[in-house]
Image (cartoon, rainbow, N blue to C red):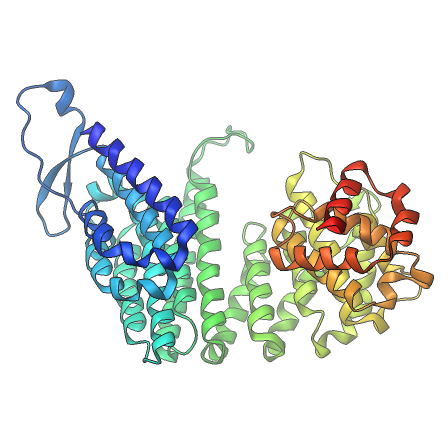
Length: 509
């Protein structure tokens, strides 16, 4: 059986690579490949193998979800994960070309998704997690296909409703934080995948209620676990009592709320009062303060200035988390500093933030101008990256509000390029190159005095996929090709050897 699984894995790996190369042109191969792939996602009864005890030890019995027990080899679960990963590749690369295969694929995935048997969860928890991601991909393809064909997105809506109904039943039954993490992560992805115009007001309110209920249960489990721990246990002990899983579960529930705001902002507005109440409560708790800040950030991001009614609830904490003392940040939790900086980053373009902009400059400038956290402090370094990104957004959106004593661009350029928070790094480097192409006077400085430093940062990130997306990469190449050669030669002493080689390659391309 193991040899058969290895053959299947090799075939799947080959198909995955070819599909990534051919993309939508891979679609003609699906009628021959997909039936075999879907067969591997079904549990088949395995014939008894006699009295070979060692062989028997490799088999387990799991429920099919309909009450029937089947005997399967333990390698079956790895085979299923491999097949689900291949299905994800098909959906991602072929996109709307996979539309006609969505329904048969969903029919095979649903029993895996809906199986609430405890034994199934024990043996197939990881399988179900990947299955949820695949279900989200099917929803996305169904929406893409419908849009391309000019059809109503009925299939996408049906898949979302079925997926939510199924996963909510699992949420109700399970108390395992790791299982609940996978489920809530999948729910968020399903909602994002369905796009706008699908989730209606009543359904949205129902989902919001379930997420807050799930968070409450998680907080109660954590409190109970902490109470039951022996007083002598060191707080830094790595004893596995589920704390990190519970924290991630609550974060995933907040991601579900963010997904709802993203796809149905208008229908989410009536939920602001209950969100305001929760944020106020969470911000009072050291354990859940970051959760409250992240929900605040998503409200700012997706509801924009329509969320002003709840700003007084969280903005004081945002500024408090950015306060600097004589010995460093007053806020010990780097994640809280990160979330607070991101909140400023998001709020910077809004006209209603004008009156708070000057104080935001002052607090961010102190953080950006302070010593860089040590290398082992990854959270602190990410928080610093977000402070730099927020200061860049402020000087770009509200340059007139910058206090005269603060030289924002020199502070920012001294910290570029960003490296630790890759997501913010990509966005900030794109903003940087866009400002260069727009010949922004503030960035370039008097007589282009900042240009050498800017070009050094751009050369450093060019070609680095983690720090620079393809569009930004192309813009960087264009910038260097537009700069006069004699000017680049004058800046050469400030470029590292690696940067000089990159520049030569860009100019010769």
